[in-house]
Amino acid sequence: MAALTITDSQVVPDTSGKRRTGVAGAAIAVGKAVYYSATANTWNLADADALATVKEGEDAGIAISASSAANQYVTVQTTGSPTIGAGAAPAAGTIYVVGLTAGDIVPDTDLGAGDFPCILGPGSGTNQITLGATGTILGQTAHA
Image (cartoon, rainbow, N blue to C red; front, side):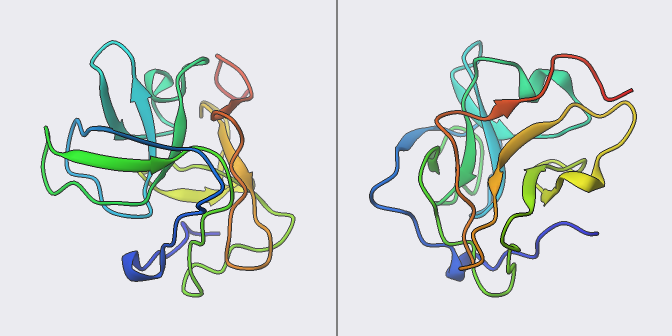
């Protein structure tokens, strides 16, 4: 399967979920998977190829506002069920994770040997993904 095709105008925050605003470490588009780097104090695009982007204890989520460049503000949904949109159409019951391309959101079956899985949450079938309290880390080591 491929990464979800997210149209930024279809991304709607869940007002009952937790949102955080902070400084972007790079340009971040709405609907991209991001993680918070406590070391750099910035939000960055998450990438399942890099352990640093899915370290246990660091927040993960979905950008619900854009940052056109580094050092600009970005808002991230870290809990709740943001609407990802009809174009993306996350499937009910499918577990979505950080993808191999920075910022992508993919089904967990897209990851393989050597990848560092970070679960964002399950699809709800209503064009939403239900996010946990933080990115759920399956392990600090790569898939075997």
